[in-house]
Length: 602
Image (tube, rainbow, N blue to C red; front, side, top):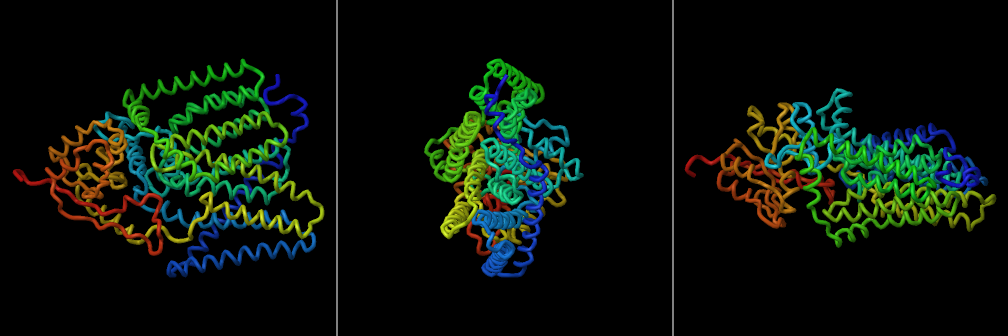
């Protein structure tokens, strides 16, 4: 039985592997080592310099590296130098340099000791504390101590942290997210090379192409537009890894039609659901590919029955462990979040480079062999990124579109592969070939900025941010952490393994949709349950407990005013000098108001 293509097509298609997969691993590992070494060089070059001088010195260093690489190639090749190879070498060098800047910048975030760089980090760590003390991950909403995300990222990260002996180290936990993302980039490179091979291209077999491809795809996997949180404690990094792994399995199935690969694909939707609820869509996407590429309706029906059964079993297991509370937090709360079509359209315009890259890459790749199966895979990408873009209209952040943009990068790289292959086919380079290659190289280099891959090589976290953390920690010294409520961030509760409820993010997830029951926190405030409450933006319109855009006030601000007095403040952390856009999500560095219970009768 033929599943992916007629026998004659398969016989004439090139092997999908090209060189051994070890070559890709070696090339990618080499790129990582060079980028990390250059990131360290940036740190030493900038030490003690003013921001403007630091960037200038870094730019001089990068310019010298780029010039040295180009000069080495031309001197070594002489008249045998090829325009396409020179352009690829320049682009590979640029992407490695951009990767060095990325590692330099995120190192400040990764090693930051507190877990409030995004709204999700404190909730993520709170879940790890729950795992250590046997507290349920999902509890009744009046506790305000649960997360609206599925549990797999927390569970896997906790397990990996435990294996290395640092299950509660915030920097280690963030490092694990970076490892997820690097692994996703390796799989994305494997996907792109298979696409190229299945369409009849061979350029991707060179080590230089693999170095460029890995660096480009890792930059896309961490781009500032749709993947700004993949180094934070959030489900994005693992969700992107699971998505690209699913896409890789689809490619393997299209190539081989093996029943073992199909069996593995039956697990994608249930595993994906445990990472991020929206990944259940993979059941339908795989069925789409089977319908387009396969000739066996029996396999399609078997797949639907098997994946349906596993999904049902997974949901049943979650219900058995956490009961109705699991479905309340992971289904009902998110299901009540309204999508703004106008916002979704705005996000599509913001991510236009990825739509364009995927579309143009698809046009180039689909001109080769295996066009019908590859068309199915291309339609899967289009369905993914379109769905992600639409659902991203729930909020202003665009991190929902991250996996779709990485797959767009896979197609974009495969399309470039065909372009470079055509250019390298020329046996003798003319002046016009050099002009063309220079123009194309420059255009691609400029597109990198449109993809959100270019960052300013400056330190994003100021020294004052560490003072801010110490000031918060000082409020807990010598006191029972169970009696002190911090609106966001759980690192202060890790030492005593305190599961803290009534957190700001848990309130906001439901208040925006007007579905929250806040009677629990209101009763605890009225009873002066907490000896101290630390909140950001207490008098601001965007107070995290009583946001001005909510359809109905939560009543929490007024309850605090009635029952607590302001005993002091913690000064906001100042932004690093000359950094206009501080951090990906800087609102948790604001001024903190310290509230203590009013005396009786006041």
